[in-house]
Length: 508
Image 1 (spheres, one colour):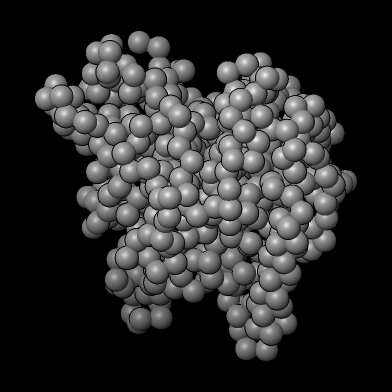
Image 2 (image 1 turned 90 degrees about the vertical axis):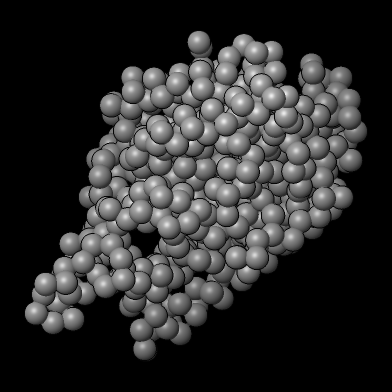
């Protein structure tokens, strides 16, 4: 059975035609993991027994002619900072090496209700801190396109698993670009929803005002299906948002029973019609859509070949009738510094709970409580986590709070205002995802600042809480380049519509 090109829709169609069973497709993915993951190292834990038992339940439902959702029987993987009840959840850290999750995250509950088959937990930079998946305490994940290169981070394990067909789709988390950047490096689709669109309950916190669960998929259609499945209000997460089903613009191919979406001003389908004469099989025209290109994203530092591919893609979109307009996001230059004050500050508070007393690694045989704390945290946390805890604690300390943390929050508001002004003029914004393609393993580990610069095109969107998607749009020397499509708040449908259009455009 050829699984490399299987999407969620194709798997569902296979079930309906009786081409294969859920158990058979699950076993094929497990064989693929066994075959390829020794070199890729995408997974930390394989949940074979869970996956087979879930697949058997779906097969029984299908044989009984019961209705089943788009995700029923579709094998997926989950980033190892999202809790699955009774399954190990390490967050890529020694301090949680043997931690067993006591409950399901809300997104996992929703996937289980839809009959998803969970193959395992994927590798990540420790507690989501990094840009390459080299900061895991357990292993380094390799890019399936070139095993000498990183898959990006921190959802590098999830991105690599999808790219290597070791699962059909995966969940990841995005704090400053941790879904979009690895999606770009691995040549898959990565959706970071609006902050609050998806519940964070059961996601191990890194920076609470930035963290957001999203998906990594092979196609835009799959990203839409997964988003519809996991999004919505959750009473366990006060930051989650009530959905408005009336504003849903359904994918014609999607039969997902939940059918919920985010409140939007209008869909691209409303704006530009439902028939395209330019692109075969396209569902709508792109004519008159206003697209902003921020000049601050095309400056010194971006790889010339990456810039060339992004601009070629934008040109193709313009040729289809879109109105391309240069815009300015003037506070972009401060976004990285702002992020690396706010995120570590929140991390220093969130990671204080790992003290060697309640759970996780504990050096409780020390002679006093202080030494228990010092020894447990000293041995349990890796270098990058320690670096960010120290930076965050410093930024929040007396005498420095106003100069650093408070100032960063003020800059964050200015960044939000930049986007607000931009969206008063344009419908969407297009940018690169990363200034480079995937870099070599070990290339940036000794220079944290150069590693942080990998997030330069993604952190501003996270600070503003906006939705964005990374879409493969070309290759440089065999390595993927991602286009970032940014929408206004709760306009996931809009960015998915345009992403679907561009997807057809670039693969012609």
